[in-house]
Length: 107
Length: 118
Image: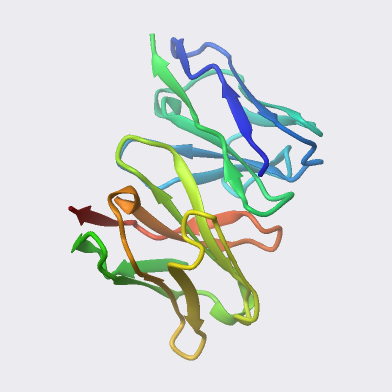
């Protein structure tokens, strides 16, 4: 099973600041990695697919990068609605796995 | 508009069974693979099971292997998850999700809470 380790667990930032979230895979997943956003009490939303492709309707301040085992989700300037939990997920191997999540909270 | 409407959740005793349903609308259901994901209270997301568009292939997390069965009825545009021998560890909100053509989960159901009591 591929383990995805996200860091940090919690990121405390102010609106307007830059957020950098990391996801590290226990073995290479090529670019078969996605990022999801989940706000409190809501359903997850697909942000980034195939490591760097923004999903439909996702604002340009969200970007993804990386390949192999190291991936990054960057939010260039945090908006109030961006404070949420972010999960990475791989579809390189079965079973599909998610990271444990990074919570982006208001400082 | 793509919609995934879930039903079938609730309270069940340990060792019991439950079937979840996910009724799809707004897209051609039989062209898309589907997945179940769960989230225990206060915890992260956990992949549960996937079924291909034609229903011929299914995949399971170890946590549900031998106890859970994913299926679909393409004539009814509905996805199912039959869960047997439930334990407290299965307590979670269960989401159904549609795969986009890249295999990612682009639309999600509203979630349904399963509580397994001992």
